[in-house]
Every structure is written in structure tokens, then in C-alpha cells.
Image 1 (tube, helix red, strand yellow):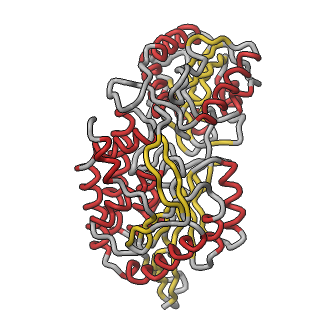
Image 2: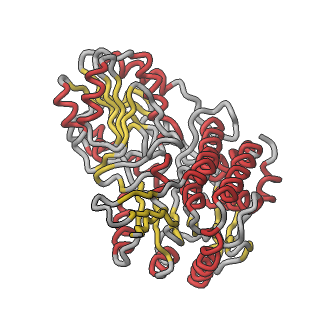
Image 3: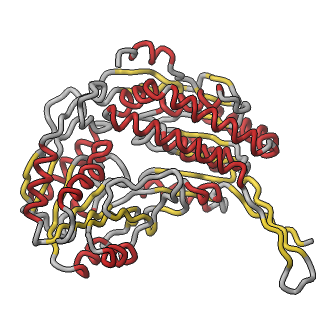
Amino acid sequence: MSVTNELLRDTRTRLHIGGDWTEGEGLLDVFDPATEQLLATVSVAGLDQARLAVDAAWEAAPGWAATAPRQRSDILRRAYDMMIAREDQLAELIILENGKTYTDAIGEVRYGAEFFRWFSEEAVRIMGEFRTAPRGDKRIVVIPEPVGVSLMVTPWNFPSAMATRKLGPALAAGCTTILKPASDTPLSALAVADILAEAGLPAGVVNVVTSRGSSGVVDAILADPRVRKLSFTGSTEVGRLLMAKAGSRIMRTSMELGGNAPFVVFEDADIKAAIAGAMLAKMRNAGETCVAANRFYVHAGIAGEFTSRLSDAMSSLRMGPGIVRSNQVGPMINAQAIEKIDDLVNSAVDDDATVLTGGRAPDGPGHFYEPTVLSGVSQDSMILGHEIFGPVAPVVSFESEEEVVRAANDTEHGLISYVYTEDVNRAFRMAEAIESGMVALNRGIISDEAAPFGGVKQSGVGREGSHHGMEEFLELKYVAW
């Protein structure tokens, strides 16, 4: 890639409100986590811009809700085509502000674009009901209607795809939106908004307000009675706070929160396939995903072989800036992420775990952490109770199915689990016994725009993707006739 300077010159850096690109009340610097160099300075919203964004979304709401489904569909389809046509530029933007490798960045763009294509198809298939009441005294008519102005708060680890995964169903359903991207990675969200505007989206339907955190501007938007829906992806801790604020207004919420995914390998598993799946589940985006394998439970009969092979695979990865396409592990998002990962690894070592490969942050520049495998991790080690969000694989051995189910469920989270076994009956026993919203059987990647994405317990409420993702942005009105 060689168009970095040109790309940044053409990148939007202002707020997007009511169809205009406007200045805010302050400025925010965006840095490249691979080099720690300044990339761009973007406008940040104050309370006045937050109010203006709600005004714009509210004013645009009646017209967008009344827009023909086919017209909404065509706009989303054009946005999909534009994202695919510009995938290299969008991928480079992700690499620069997020640190992903090229493979991960181009994968995110294509995955993110698919939500626009999928929901362009769903926009024309919103179904109501018409039936006779059991007593025969009336007809029951059920009409789905857009929930209204929707606030979307997205994370830094998928700055493009998390925006499209929320905007796609909301726009297809007829909702107007306010998008608040993460302060570390605002450029990709602004690029998505620019594409939607070019695709023909009316002014005010999508508004983007950047800020330095999830308080202040977000609080002001949540407090506005015209805002009817909150969709948030991020940590469980922040999700709890936002749910409490939304709850004070009885607001519809969707929450995709933290994970602590178990990766379970039984003695009958295809070890080669399990290693390949482990590398995908652990190292996509260098482990900075909510669906990353966080705890590896491997049957004692094969734990030694599995751990040795995993260590070999992890140690062979090439680490460096994603702008070099051959690099396979990019940087963490910031220095705080490195500190957290290092603390968790050191705590495991203090509990007698062994570092087989990695285990440290190399000297800068850049926020890098070596791909790491830990063996002999004790079941009560702190690292197993926290979402690592980095390239670290702690391995624990187990003896029985009952034992590993208890261990897998010993967490407040329940987003995703991974199971490797050649026994189909065991596979489905595990899928039913493990408490998670998603289960990957003999595969390391599960995300699909046509499938419902979400968790149970404190990993969130609601689902994104599939036709269920549309339901999050629709209210049902019952008419007795």
C-alpha cells in the first residue's frame, strides 16, 4: 500500500450532522498504534452538537420511516457495492488507526460490507400478521414499525464492521441514527457515513458524533426523550452503566458485551484441525476480539502434543505493522492494553504457569505484544477469569466431560464457546451444556451476517445479524379490527 498520505488527506475528520460535515467543540488526535505517530486530528462533539444530532435524526425520522422498503434496500445495496469497490482504501484506514494486519483489515471490510448487502435484502421482507382471533369476534393485525431514533456506540476493535452491523438493520427497518464511534478509531466510522451519504441516504438519517469517551455526549443523547433505542458494543463494565441510564427511560437496548470464550479440545479431536482453528479463534485481530478464544481446555491425553504444536504455530508468526502485508500480528490498540496483558501473564507465571513462547512486550515503537502460550495454568489463575484481549493462549488440561463443562461455565460471561471433537453426540451435548449464546463446533470462526450474533449472562442482551437483527429495531403494533 502506498497511498497513505493521499488517503489521509481525503479522509473525513469532522462531525456528520444533518447531512453536513461540521466542526465540533474540540479536537481529538488519532494515533497509529504500530508507530505511535499522529495520523489525524478529528472534531469532537460537545453538548450542543449532541443536541443538534438528535434534532437532525428526529426531523428526518418521519420521512425515512415512510420511505419505500425498496428504496431503503437500494441505498444499502449501493453502499455495499461502494465498500467492496474501495476495500483496499478502507482496509488501509483500519490498519492505520487500529493496527490490524492487512488480512484482518480486508476481512473486516468485506464482513462489514456484507451487513449492508444482507439488510438490503431484509428491508423488503419485513413481515406483519393478519389472522382471525380464536373467538372469531375480530381480526388480529400486527404491524411492525421502526422503533425510532437510535443511538449506536461502537468499539475500536472493529471500527468499520461494528458500525455497519448496527446501521444496516436500523436503516433497513426505517430508523434514523446517531453513531458514536470509539475515540481511538473514529476515521473508519466517518468513512462509512461518507459512503452512505454518497449512496443516496437522506440528510439526518445517519449522524456521526465523535467524543473522547462514552460519557458526556452519550449521556446527553440518552437523556433526550426523542431517542428510543440504544445499541452498544463494548465492555461489560461500560454496558452495565449504559443499561442503567437507558433503564431510567425504559429505552430499548441491545448490548454486545465482553466474552471469556472457552476453547475445548477432546482426546478424539483432529489435532491438526484444532490447531488451525485455535490460531483463527485466538489470533484474528491479534486476540483483540470479544469472540477470541480466551481459555484453552485440552484433554490430558493430548494436552502435551496440542500445547507443543500451538506454541510452534504461535512462535512462527511474523509481528509488525499491518501496512506490510506479510506481517501476521499487529500491535495492540494502546499502551494500556499492553499493561493489562502483561499483568495477566505475570500473574499466571506467579501461579506456576510456564511460558512456552512469547510472554513479553518488545521495545517500541508501537504497542506490540509477542504471541504467547502458557502451559500448566491453574484453574484458579486470574488470567482465566479476565478477558485477555491480546495474543495470549493459557492452556489447562482436563480429564472428563463433566469437569470441562463446569470449568467452561465458571464465568459471568457467555458469548461464544469452541468445541473440537469427532463425536457428534458429544459435540451436541457440549453445545447444549455450555452456557453461551454461540457455539463453534470444529471451527475457529463463527461470525456470519446471516446468523444471530450475541451472548447470554453478562455478555449482553439482544442479537445482531440475521433477521433477528432487524427485530431489535422494530416495534410491534397490534390492531384489533
